[in-house]
Image (cartoon, rainbow, N blue to C red):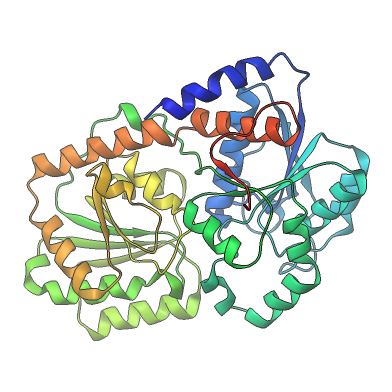
Length: 400
Protein backbone atom coordinates (compact mmCIF):
# COMPACT_ATOMS: atom_id res chain seq x y z
CA UNK A 1 0.00 0.00 0.00
CA UNK A 2 2.88 2.34 0.78
CA UNK A 3 5.23 1.47 -2.15
CA UNK A 4 4.47 4.56 -4.24
CA UNK A 5 4.83 6.77 -1.15
CA UNK A 6 8.26 5.31 -0.39
CA UNK A 7 9.37 6.02 -3.96
CA UNK A 8 8.33 9.66 -3.54
CA UNK A 9 10.05 10.25 -0.19
CA UNK A 10 13.60 10.65 -1.60
CA UNK A 11 12.23 13.12 -4.15
CA UNK A 12 10.50 15.08 -1.41
CA UNK A 13 13.55 15.07 0.89
CA UNK A 14 15.83 16.20 -1.95
CA UNK A 15 13.43 18.90 -3.11
CA UNK A 16 13.35 20.41 0.37
CA UNK A 17 16.94 21.52 -0.23
CA UNK A 18 15.89 23.40 -3.34
CA UNK A 19 14.69 26.96 -2.84
CA UNK A 20 11.17 27.12 -1.45
CA UNK A 21 8.56 27.34 -4.22
CA UNK A 22 5.77 29.91 -4.20
CA UNK A 23 2.42 28.50 -5.35
CA UNK A 24 -0.89 30.35 -5.63
CA UNK A 25 -4.19 28.45 -5.59
CA UNK A 26 -7.11 30.34 -7.10
CA UNK A 27 -10.74 29.48 -6.39
CA UNK A 28 -14.02 31.37 -6.63
CA UNK A 29 -15.17 30.59 -3.07
CA UNK A 30 -14.03 29.04 0.17
CA UNK A 31 -17.54 29.26 1.56
CA UNK A 32 -18.91 26.50 3.76
CA UNK A 33 -21.84 26.14 1.38
CA UNK A 34 -19.47 25.63 -1.55
CA UNK A 35 -18.87 22.14 -0.17
CA UNK A 36 -16.09 19.80 -1.25
CA UNK A 37 -13.91 22.19 -3.31
CA UNK A 38 -13.61 24.61 -0.38
CA UNK A 39 -12.68 21.87 2.05
CA UNK A 40 -10.22 19.96 -0.13
CA UNK A 41 -8.48 23.12 -1.37
CA UNK A 42 -7.81 24.30 2.18
CA UNK A 43 -6.70 20.82 3.30
CA UNK A 44 -4.37 20.51 0.29
CA UNK A 45 -2.79 23.92 0.86
CA UNK A 46 -2.39 23.23 4.57
CA UNK A 47 -0.64 19.94 3.74
CA UNK A 48 1.60 21.61 1.16
CA UNK A 49 2.70 24.23 3.68
CA UNK A 50 3.67 21.39 6.03
CA UNK A 51 5.80 20.07 3.14
CA UNK A 52 7.74 23.34 2.97
CA UNK A 53 5.79 24.77 0.03
CA UNK A 54 4.93 28.46 0.30
CA UNK A 55 1.33 27.89 -0.82
CA UNK A 56 -1.29 30.65 -0.74
CA UNK A 57 -4.93 31.00 -1.80
CA UNK A 58 -6.79 33.90 -3.38
CA UNK A 59 -10.58 33.85 -3.41
CA UNK A 60 -13.68 35.96 -2.98
CA UNK A 61 -14.87 36.61 0.56
CA UNK A 62 -17.85 34.31 1.14
CA UNK A 63 -18.54 35.98 4.49
CA UNK A 64 -19.94 38.94 2.57
CA UNK A 65 -22.39 36.70 0.70
CA UNK A 66 -24.51 35.30 3.56
CA UNK A 67 -22.02 32.44 4.01
CA UNK A 68 -18.86 31.97 6.02
CA UNK A 69 -15.36 31.02 4.92
CA UNK A 70 -14.33 27.48 5.74
CA UNK A 71 -10.92 28.75 6.87
CA UNK A 72 -9.29 32.11 7.50
CA UNK A 73 -5.49 32.25 7.67
CA UNK A 74 -2.86 34.84 6.81
CA UNK A 75 -1.93 32.95 3.64
CA UNK A 76 -5.49 33.28 2.30
CA UNK A 77 -6.25 36.50 0.41
CA UNK A 78 -9.93 37.47 0.42
CA UNK A 79 -11.21 39.79 -2.29
CA UNK A 80 -14.52 41.67 -2.41
CA UNK A 81 -17.15 39.36 -3.95
CA UNK A 82 -18.23 40.10 -7.54
CA UNK A 83 -21.58 41.66 -8.36
CA UNK A 84 -22.17 38.90 -10.93
CA UNK A 85 -22.09 35.48 -9.26
CA UNK A 86 -22.45 32.92 -12.05
CA UNK A 87 -19.26 33.71 -13.99
CA UNK A 88 -17.73 35.38 -10.89
CA UNK A 89 -16.15 38.23 -12.82
CA UNK A 90 -14.35 40.93 -10.89
CA UNK A 91 -11.49 43.20 -11.93
CA UNK A 92 -10.18 42.78 -8.38
CA UNK A 93 -9.09 39.22 -9.20
CA UNK A 94 -7.08 40.34 -12.23
CA UNK A 95 -5.54 43.20 -10.26
CA UNK A 96 -4.44 40.85 -7.48
CA UNK A 97 -2.68 38.56 -9.95
CA UNK A 98 -0.75 41.53 -11.34
CA UNK A 99 0.70 42.41 -7.92
CA UNK A 100 2.97 39.41 -7.44
CA UNK A 101 4.46 36.74 -9.68
CA UNK A 102 4.48 33.18 -8.34
CA UNK A 103 6.53 30.14 -9.37
CA UNK A 104 3.39 28.17 -10.11
CA UNK A 105 -0.38 28.73 -10.29
CA UNK A 106 -3.03 26.15 -9.44
CA UNK A 107 -6.59 26.79 -10.64
CA UNK A 108 -9.36 25.10 -8.66
CA UNK A 109 -12.35 24.47 -10.94
CA UNK A 110 -13.17 25.75 -14.41
CA UNK A 111 -15.85 27.79 -16.25
CA UNK A 112 -15.62 30.79 -13.93
CA UNK A 113 -13.49 33.92 -14.27
CA UNK A 114 -10.94 33.19 -11.50
CA UNK A 115 -9.71 30.05 -13.29
CA UNK A 116 -9.70 31.66 -16.73
CA UNK A 117 -7.88 34.84 -15.71
CA UNK A 118 -5.34 32.80 -13.73
CA UNK A 119 -4.52 30.67 -16.79
CA UNK A 120 -4.36 33.76 -18.98
CA UNK A 121 -2.05 35.65 -16.60
CA UNK A 122 0.18 32.60 -16.12
CA UNK A 123 0.71 32.37 -19.88
CA UNK A 124 1.43 36.09 -19.99
CA UNK A 125 4.01 35.75 -17.19
CA UNK A 126 5.42 32.58 -18.84
CA UNK A 127 4.79 30.68 -15.60
CA UNK A 128 3.46 27.07 -15.47
CA UNK A 129 -0.03 26.44 -14.17
CA UNK A 130 -2.14 23.46 -13.12
CA UNK A 131 -5.90 23.02 -13.37
CA UNK A 132 -8.10 20.86 -11.15
CA UNK A 133 -11.41 20.51 -13.09
CA UNK A 134 -13.25 18.97 -10.11
CA UNK A 135 -15.48 16.80 -12.28
CA UNK A 136 -16.74 19.76 -14.29
CA UNK A 137 -15.89 18.08 -17.60
CA UNK A 138 -17.82 14.85 -17.05
CA UNK A 139 -20.39 14.22 -19.82
CA UNK A 140 -23.26 14.63 -17.34
CA UNK A 141 -22.12 18.18 -16.53
CA UNK A 142 -23.04 19.23 -20.07
CA UNK A 143 -26.66 18.36 -19.37
CA UNK A 144 -26.85 21.65 -17.48
CA UNK A 145 -26.24 24.82 -19.51
CA UNK A 146 -24.79 22.53 -22.17
CA UNK A 147 -24.83 25.03 -25.02
CA UNK A 148 -23.15 27.74 -22.95
CA UNK A 149 -20.47 25.32 -21.75
CA UNK A 150 -19.74 24.04 -25.25
CA UNK A 151 -19.36 27.62 -26.46
CA UNK A 152 -17.06 28.44 -23.54
CA UNK A 153 -15.08 25.25 -24.22
CA UNK A 154 -14.57 26.28 -27.86
CA UNK A 155 -13.80 29.95 -27.12
CA UNK A 156 -11.34 29.71 -24.23
CA UNK A 157 -11.76 26.80 -21.83
CA UNK A 158 -10.18 24.07 -23.91
CA UNK A 159 -7.23 26.33 -24.72
CA UNK A 160 -6.76 27.08 -21.02
CA UNK A 161 -6.80 23.36 -20.18
CA UNK A 162 -4.54 22.11 -22.96
CA UNK A 163 -2.00 24.87 -22.27
CA UNK A 164 -1.72 23.81 -18.63
CA UNK A 165 1.51 22.13 -17.55
CA UNK A 166 -0.58 19.43 -15.88
CA UNK A 167 -4.20 18.62 -15.10
CA UNK A 168 -5.06 17.25 -11.68
CA UNK A 169 -7.79 14.58 -11.79
CA UNK A 170 -9.01 12.89 -8.62
CA UNK A 171 -9.54 9.48 -10.26
CA UNK A 172 -8.69 7.65 -13.50
CA UNK A 173 -12.31 7.82 -14.66
CA UNK A 174 -12.02 11.60 -14.74
CA UNK A 175 -8.80 11.33 -16.75
CA UNK A 176 -10.54 9.13 -19.34
CA UNK A 177 -13.31 11.73 -19.76
CA UNK A 178 -10.68 14.43 -20.27
CA UNK A 179 -8.99 12.43 -23.01
CA UNK A 180 -12.34 11.79 -24.73
CA UNK A 181 -12.84 15.56 -24.88
CA UNK A 182 -9.52 15.98 -26.66
CA UNK A 183 -7.54 17.18 -23.65
CA UNK A 184 -3.89 16.46 -24.42
CA UNK A 185 -2.12 17.96 -21.39
CA UNK A 186 -0.46 15.60 -18.88
CA UNK A 187 -2.85 14.36 -16.20
CA UNK A 188 -1.90 13.64 -12.59
CA UNK A 189 -4.30 11.29 -10.77
CA UNK A 190 -4.22 12.32 -7.10
CA UNK A 191 -7.16 11.82 -4.73
CA UNK A 192 -8.59 14.51 -2.52
CA UNK A 193 -7.19 14.69 1.02
CA UNK A 194 -9.31 13.74 4.02
CA UNK A 195 -9.22 15.34 7.46
CA UNK A 196 -8.39 12.38 9.71
CA UNK A 197 -8.08 14.05 13.12
CA UNK A 198 -9.64 13.21 15.50
CA UNK A 199 -11.67 10.58 13.67
CA UNK A 200 -9.12 7.80 13.12
CA UNK A 201 -8.57 7.38 16.85
CA UNK A 202 -12.26 7.35 17.73
CA UNK A 203 -14.15 4.10 18.21
CA UNK A 204 -16.79 3.11 15.67
CA UNK A 205 -20.15 4.32 17.00
CA UNK A 206 -23.06 2.05 17.86
CA UNK A 207 -26.19 4.19 17.26
CA UNK A 208 -29.34 3.50 19.28
CA UNK A 209 -31.06 2.37 16.06
CA UNK A 210 -30.17 1.71 12.42
CA UNK A 211 -30.02 4.96 10.46
CA UNK A 212 -29.32 5.29 6.75
CA UNK A 213 -28.21 8.73 5.64
CA UNK A 214 -27.61 10.87 2.60
CA UNK A 215 -25.16 13.78 2.88
CA UNK A 216 -24.44 16.40 0.26
CA UNK A 217 -25.89 18.76 -2.27
CA UNK A 218 -29.57 18.31 -3.08
CA UNK A 219 -29.52 18.00 -6.86
CA UNK A 220 -31.23 15.83 -9.45
CA UNK A 221 -28.01 14.13 -10.56
CA UNK A 222 -27.62 12.78 -7.02
CA UNK A 223 -30.66 10.48 -7.53
CA UNK A 224 -31.81 10.98 -3.94
CA UNK A 225 -35.37 9.91 -4.79
CA UNK A 226 -33.99 6.42 -5.41
CA UNK A 227 -33.25 6.17 -1.69
CA UNK A 228 -36.87 7.11 -0.95
CA UNK A 229 -38.18 4.49 -3.37
CA UNK A 230 -35.89 1.88 -1.82
CA UNK A 231 -37.19 2.88 1.61
CA UNK A 232 -40.73 2.40 0.32
CA UNK A 233 -39.89 -1.05 -1.08
CA UNK A 234 -38.41 -2.11 2.25
CA UNK A 235 -41.80 -1.40 3.85
CA UNK A 236 -42.47 -2.58 7.39
CA UNK A 237 -38.90 -3.85 7.72
CA UNK A 238 -37.71 -0.30 8.37
CA UNK A 239 -40.32 0.51 11.03
CA UNK A 240 -37.58 0.67 13.66
CA UNK A 241 -34.98 2.35 11.40
CA UNK A 242 -34.60 5.92 10.19
CA UNK A 243 -33.58 7.69 6.98
CA UNK A 244 -31.84 11.08 7.29
CA UNK A 245 -31.40 13.40 4.28
CA UNK A 246 -28.74 16.03 5.08
CA UNK A 247 -28.06 18.93 2.74
CA UNK A 248 -29.49 21.78 0.69
CA UNK A 249 -29.38 22.95 -2.90
CA UNK A 250 -31.99 22.89 -5.65
CA UNK A 251 -35.17 24.09 -3.88
CA UNK A 252 -37.51 22.69 -6.53
CA UNK A 253 -35.91 19.25 -6.31
CA UNK A 254 -35.86 19.45 -2.51
CA UNK A 255 -39.62 20.11 -2.51
CA UNK A 256 -40.14 17.22 -4.93
CA UNK A 257 -38.36 14.86 -2.52
CA UNK A 258 -40.52 16.01 0.39
CA UNK A 259 -43.71 15.60 -1.65
CA UNK A 260 -42.68 12.10 -2.71
CA UNK A 261 -42.10 11.26 0.95
CA UNK A 262 -45.65 12.42 1.72
CA UNK A 263 -47.16 10.69 -1.31
CA UNK A 264 -45.57 7.38 -0.42
CA UNK A 265 -46.50 7.87 3.25
CA UNK A 266 -42.98 7.05 4.30
CA UNK A 267 -42.26 6.82 8.00
CA UNK A 268 -39.12 7.81 9.86
CA UNK A 269 -37.71 10.11 7.16
CA UNK A 270 -36.06 13.38 8.22
CA UNK A 271 -34.89 16.27 6.03
CA UNK A 272 -32.42 18.32 8.07
CA UNK A 273 -31.49 20.95 5.49
CA UNK A 274 -27.93 22.29 5.42
CA UNK A 275 -25.88 21.48 8.52
CA UNK A 276 -22.38 22.47 9.57
CA UNK A 277 -20.20 22.43 12.66
CA UNK A 278 -21.42 20.63 15.78
CA UNK A 279 -24.94 20.09 14.40
CA UNK A 280 -23.49 18.25 11.40
CA UNK A 281 -21.15 16.18 13.57
CA UNK A 282 -23.98 15.11 15.88
CA UNK A 283 -26.13 14.00 12.99
CA UNK A 284 -23.30 12.13 11.23
CA UNK A 285 -22.34 10.34 14.43
CA UNK A 286 -25.90 8.99 14.64
CA UNK A 287 -25.69 7.25 11.24
CA UNK A 288 -25.14 3.54 10.69
CA UNK A 289 -24.69 3.73 6.90
CA UNK A 290 -24.29 6.32 4.15
CA UNK A 291 -26.10 5.84 0.81
CA UNK A 292 -24.72 7.53 -2.34
CA UNK A 293 -26.79 6.77 -5.49
CA UNK A 294 -25.24 9.54 -7.64
CA UNK A 295 -25.12 9.28 -11.41
CA UNK A 296 -21.48 10.35 -11.19
CA UNK A 297 -18.91 11.77 -8.80
CA UNK A 298 -15.37 12.68 -9.76
CA UNK A 299 -14.32 11.78 -6.20
CA UNK A 300 -17.23 11.74 -3.76
CA UNK A 301 -15.83 13.56 -0.74
CA UNK A 302 -18.86 12.60 1.35
CA UNK A 303 -17.84 8.94 1.05
CA UNK A 304 -14.38 9.63 2.46
CA UNK A 305 -15.85 11.84 5.21
CA UNK A 306 -18.05 8.99 6.43
CA UNK A 307 -15.45 6.22 6.06
CA UNK A 308 -12.97 8.07 8.26
CA UNK A 309 -15.73 8.19 10.90
CA UNK A 310 -16.13 4.41 10.69
CA UNK A 311 -19.44 4.45 8.83
CA UNK A 312 -19.83 1.89 5.98
CA UNK A 313 -21.06 3.22 2.63
CA UNK A 314 -23.36 1.96 -0.11
CA UNK A 315 -22.20 3.83 -3.23
CA UNK A 316 -23.14 3.54 -6.89
CA UNK A 317 -20.63 2.66 -9.58
CA UNK A 318 -21.11 6.23 -10.75
CA UNK A 319 -18.56 6.99 -8.01
CA UNK A 320 -14.87 5.97 -8.26
CA UNK A 321 -14.98 3.95 -5.05
CA UNK A 322 -14.04 0.39 -5.98
CA UNK A 323 -12.06 0.55 -2.72
CA UNK A 324 -15.32 -0.10 -0.86
CA UNK A 325 -15.21 -3.66 -2.20
CA UNK A 326 -11.45 -4.11 -2.01
CA UNK A 327 -11.31 -3.06 1.65
CA UNK A 328 -14.71 -4.59 2.54
CA UNK A 329 -15.91 -1.37 4.14
CA UNK A 330 -19.11 -0.97 2.13
CA UNK A 331 -20.79 -1.87 -1.14
CA UNK A 332 -19.97 -0.54 -4.63
CA UNK A 333 -23.14 -1.31 -6.59
CA UNK A 334 -24.94 -0.95 -9.89
CA UNK A 335 -27.01 2.21 -9.93
CA UNK A 336 -30.52 0.76 -10.10
CA UNK A 337 -33.37 0.49 -7.62
CA UNK A 338 -33.40 -3.30 -7.31
CA UNK A 339 -29.73 -3.44 -6.38
CA UNK A 340 -30.04 -0.56 -3.92
CA UNK A 341 -32.99 -2.23 -2.15
CA UNK A 342 -31.05 -5.49 -1.91
CA UNK A 343 -27.95 -3.88 -0.40
CA UNK A 344 -29.91 -1.70 2.01
CA UNK A 345 -31.72 -4.83 3.23
CA UNK A 346 -28.36 -6.56 3.67
CA UNK A 347 -27.07 -3.60 5.67
CA UNK A 348 -30.27 -3.43 7.75
CA UNK A 349 -29.85 -7.02 8.94
CA UNK A 350 -26.06 -6.93 9.35
CA UNK A 351 -25.01 -7.79 12.93
CA UNK A 352 -23.53 -4.87 14.86
CA UNK A 353 -20.22 -6.69 15.25
CA UNK A 354 -19.83 -7.00 11.47
CA UNK A 355 -20.85 -3.39 10.87
CA UNK A 356 -18.20 -2.28 13.37
CA UNK A 357 -15.56 -4.38 11.58
CA UNK A 358 -16.54 -2.74 8.29
CA UNK A 359 -16.23 0.65 9.96
CA UNK A 360 -12.71 -0.15 11.16
CA UNK A 361 -11.71 -1.29 7.69
CA UNK A 362 -13.01 2.00 6.30
CA UNK A 363 -10.81 3.91 8.73
CA UNK A 364 -7.83 1.78 7.64
CA UNK A 365 -8.55 2.58 3.99
CA UNK A 366 -8.49 6.33 4.62
CA UNK A 367 -5.37 6.02 6.77
CA UNK A 368 -3.52 4.13 4.04
CA UNK A 369 -4.44 6.21 0.99
CA UNK A 370 -6.13 9.54 1.66
CA UNK A 371 -4.45 11.45 4.48
CA UNK A 372 -3.51 15.11 4.05
CA UNK A 373 0.20 14.26 4.25
CA UNK A 374 0.04 11.52 1.59
CA UNK A 375 -1.86 13.77 -0.83
CA UNK A 376 0.43 16.74 -0.15
CA UNK A 377 3.54 14.67 -0.84
CA UNK A 378 2.11 13.59 -4.21
CA UNK A 379 1.01 17.14 -5.03
CA UNK A 380 4.45 18.54 -4.20
CA UNK A 381 6.14 15.90 -6.35
CA UNK A 382 3.86 16.95 -9.23
CA UNK A 383 4.88 20.57 -8.71
CA UNK A 384 8.56 19.63 -8.69
CA UNK A 385 8.14 17.74 -11.97
CA UNK A 386 6.30 20.66 -13.57
CA UNK A 387 9.09 23.02 -12.48
CA UNK A 388 11.77 20.68 -13.81
CA UNK A 389 13.16 19.76 -10.40
CA UNK A 390 12.47 16.02 -10.47
CA UNK A 391 11.56 13.01 -12.60
CA UNK A 392 7.93 12.32 -13.56
CA UNK A 393 6.00 10.44 -10.85
CA UNK A 394 4.23 7.28 -12.03
CA UNK A 395 0.77 8.75 -11.35
CA UNK A 396 1.24 11.42 -14.04
CA UNK A 397 0.05 10.23 -17.44
CA UNK A 398 1.16 11.72 -20.74
CA UNK A 399 -1.04 11.70 -23.84
CA UNK A 400 0.90 8.96 -25.63
